[in-house]
Each structure stands twice: as C-alpha cells, then as structure tokens.
Image: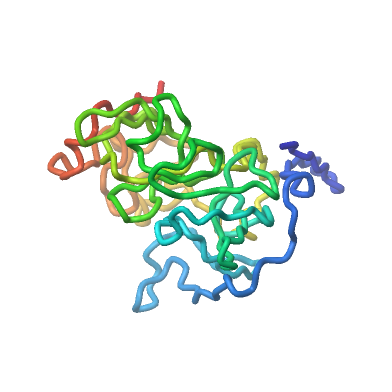
Length: 281
C-alpha cells in the first residue's frame, strides 16, 4: 500500500505522510445500520474529573462501527466481501460482508483480501485468508490474527494494523502462539483465530508532520516534567536545563516509572507464558 508525501505550503517546510486510501478502500460512506453514536467522556470519570492527562475529544466527529470479532453465531455460513472501508476508531481497515442469509456485518480486514472473496467460519473450514477456525485445526507456521483469549470470548488479541501472530504447535490442551511482541504463550486450542495478518501494514510508516494533526485525533500537548515547577512534578525546578534530581524517573505523583517491573507476579495468566518478550536494546 503506497504512502503519499504531502509537502507543506508554509515556510516551516514540514513533511508529512498519509496513507493512499484511494488505492485500497472501495467505499467512502459507512453502512448506516451498523453505526452507533457513543457519548464522549474523554479522560474524565463519572464525576467529570480528568483522570487521564493530555486527552481531549477528537476535533472530527466520528461514529462507532459495530465490528463482529467472534462470528461464532455464523458457523458454516459463507459470506461475500462487499467493501473495504476506513474505520476512524482503529488503525486497521474493516470489511463489510454479506452472509448467505442476507445479513451484513463488519469484520476486521486482513491484508490482501479483495472485494468478491468468500470467507467462512467453522470447525473444519479451509485454512484460507480471512477464514476463522479453532487453533487446533491450524497448521504450524500459519499467520493468524483476532485471537480469542478464552473459548467463545471473541477476538481479543492481535487486532492492530499490520500485526500478526504465528501458530507454533499444539501441546496437550493448549496451542503455542508467538505473539507480535515476541512473547511465546499458551492459548486453549478450542479458541478461534482468523487466518492472515491485519490490514494497513503501512500505518507504522505514517509521519504525523505537525502538532495539529494530533489535535484532530484528540491528543493534547504533553508537557515534560523537567519543564515544570518543583511543586508540579518531581523532575521540575532548577535553573535552566538541569538534571531531574532523582535517581529513578517518576511520574507526577512520585511513583517510579522506570527500572522496576509493573506486572503482578501473582497474576493467574503468568502460567501460560512460556517466554517473555525480549528486552529492548
């Protein structure tokens, strides 16, 4: 998928890149029966207080597309891909399919799917792009996405643009999966997964270009702690560009944010992790 470069018309000479949607998407208007309006409570709790900093409502109005991450109630019912569409609520593209009984639904679109292709969900369906089947019936080395964490829970894992996991094999009642992060973990073999990798793999190559583009998405400016006063942040205060003044980096409330493990050592799902993701160098 090509990435277009947009040059600035101002003297700042900003260069930003955007996805060439016209070469991929086949529909510009969403399917109205599958749209819902969500009330915006960005960064605020039920009392109206800001609990997440540097967030705001997006400048652009957007409706939520109801995406089916399960398909379990449509087993062995073939569906034909009608459109590939943009979804402002996620990084991946979505596809609108029409089932044999006439019902239309949105699903996550895999990379390489085309309008007119037929997809299927079931116990013993073919291992083909876009199909959905249990992990126990997927061959080792196959790329998968939209993986269930528990049988019948719907796809929870591997849903962002360009991501995929790799099926490594079956051991007892569990399938061994290599996650996009490099982590190797066990998932019950009765869980369903879709074949392929998530669409819009060039999302990682997009260059924002200007601060205003983040404001459109609802991201407010993030102020560095070292630029604040001492009363506002543990890193603040001092004359000019001084060091943070504490041995370990901390957040606004004094909690250590670097150099310590944050995962609960007694978390029940720890026993399913065979190998943790490799550390960044």
